[in-house]
Image (tube, rainbow, N blue to C red; front, side, top):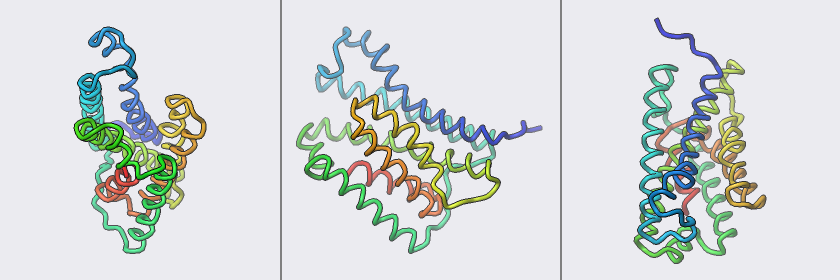
Length: 219
């Protein structure tokens, strides 16, 4: 007999994904100081930076895999949806993605992807973007489970981006602390809300939603 599924379980899974992102802090504060002799992350060599990203990607990949498998088994909820987006939904999503790219460019003074390449060089750029791809997997999971939680609570599907709001209050808000900037935090929180809207516009299709979030975040 299956355990009774609680509405709050969906929120917990969103928080598990957020906690998975937080594993990077564990690496930087506990594991890597022992590996690298306690030097500051700002003084990492390129090799140490790549090792940090690889360890982080490993943690994030394992976390995402466990969450996806567990939710399908325990919650009877497959977060990997292949529903077909509408043409209008795709067009509006594309506009929102372009909006995110423009906002990124305004912040960087250049397209983010170009700025990252100029700042880091080819090798670090490749690993940096691999790191981003893994990060967005967990970002997507927070949106999907956050949306499912709210709709289970309301007992109906809705076009209000609750998943984006959950992402805004977790991944978005924490950037105020991690970056030490209210301006940066508000910017990421805005992106989080837009990701929630994009997820709904694309009919919760996991591949399209993930791709849109990746493009919006990295370019």
